[in-house]
Structures are given as C-alpha cells and as structure tokens.
Length: 308
Image 1 (cartoon, helix red, strand yellow):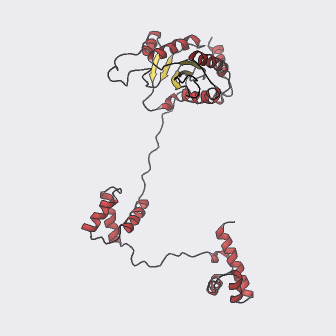
Image 2: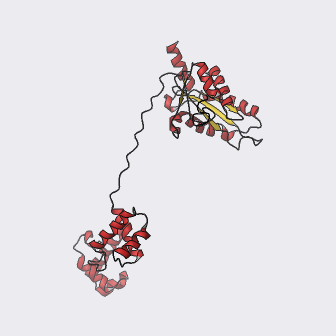
Image 3: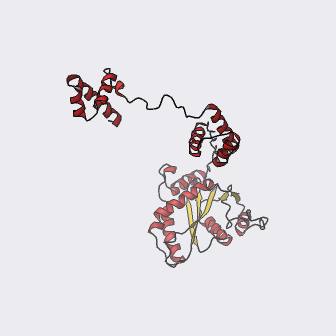
C-alpha cells in the first residue's frame, strides 16, 4: 500500500472516530489539531477520494511574470540559442527594462526551455547486411591485443583472427607485431589451413592491412594487399569508424578473451603459439546459437557434402 493510501485510511478512521466521540478526544487520540479534525469531517462524503490532499498552489500570484515579459524572455533566449543566459539577462535589463532577479530569470528560462517542443532525432536506418551464402565467400580479419596480464616477459603480442561469415569457422595466429608483413604471413597460413577456398577478405582500415588512409602512401599497395592481388582474392575494406561491419570477428575476440586469455599465462611467443594452437583445434568444435546449436566444423562439412 502506498503512503498516500495509508494517509487516506488514517483520515477515514479519524473521521469515523470523531463521529462517535468529541472533536477534542479525536484530536488528542490522533495527535492533530481540532482544526484539522473539523477540516476532514467537513470534506468527508463517505468516499476515500474526498480525503485526498487538494492542490496547495495559490489561486493568485500577483508577482508572476506577465505575458509581455515572457515574450521578451523568449526573444532574448532565442537570440542566444537558449545557452548564454547571462547575455540574454543583460540585454533584457538594458533594452527591455527587465527588473527581476537573475535567479528568477533562470527558473523561468528553464521552464520555457522544457516546454519547447523537442525535435525528434531520426533513427538511423542501417542497411541490411547480406550474410555469406557459403563457406569462404567472405572472411573477416582483425587484430586483437593479447591482454597485458598474459605475457610473463612484459612484451606486447597480437592475435590475428579470421572468421568465416557463413560457418563461423575461425583461424588464429599470434605475432610480436601487427604489420603488413605479419598480415601477409597470416594470410598465407589462413589459405593453407582453411578447409575451403577463399573468395573475399574483409578488414578494417588499419595500417597493418592498407595504406588508403595514409595520404603519402595511398597509391602504394601494402604486402597484404599485394598478396591478395596475386592470389586473386577480392579485398573489401569496411567504412571508417564502423566496427559493427566486422562484428563477427569482434564478437569472436570477446569470446576468446573469456574462454582462453582469462586462464592463459605465456612465457614467450613460442609458448603462446602452442597454447593458442590447442585452443584453435577445440574452438571450431564448440556449438554456436547462431548456427542452430551446430559447430563450425559441422556446418563446413554440411556445405562440403553438397558442393563436392
């Protein structure tokens, strides 16, 4: 029961008690004034609604802002885009003869601003993302920093990750640096290990993949881009500042963080690669809800049974 309901029931009990006893006895029993008892007795008509509190707002307010003053305030606030209240107040006083205090002006400005009709922002309509129809049609590649709590030697390491959009089959490798040389080496290992031919590769605009964002080298292809060109693989770069377009590999990075790196401790690059290889062999046998509770290896096998 809410506090307001409790108050109304209390008042009802007080009124009924007063109907059987004197007002003085009622006031003493319920610890209120005699005036309060008379007030609720006069209002009570047998319903709880009659015991509600009435508005305490004054019926008249002689010192309230007039319509002329409100119009002047709107005009000055609009001029300063409803942000610079001090300059708007200064102009009101100097040009419009405004005599109210600055505190009162700020309260009126806040009330008028809240009453303004707010423009609704149009929701951004995202283009529907077309999912790959078969394994190898599009591979998302990205780089993840190996968490600093994993290496015991204090060095920085990087995990290259490739995720097939259709089957979610994943390949990973660890490097000491994220550069175009590492990217090319990872691509060659990916092609060698992938159980399907690769048609298209998608990455972000990082300097380890492309020079398109570097004005000086924008016309020169990186080692990674040259390797794709030599292998006849289509290269697709996502739009700038849209990591959601690489969402599948980004999601896989979060999964790897929780399932592998949280329990992992490495002492060198070779040690890290060995542990990652063990996790790599297991990970493609883990079921995924997006695959209908199937594993990536099962999905790849299903497509291979149809295609070959």
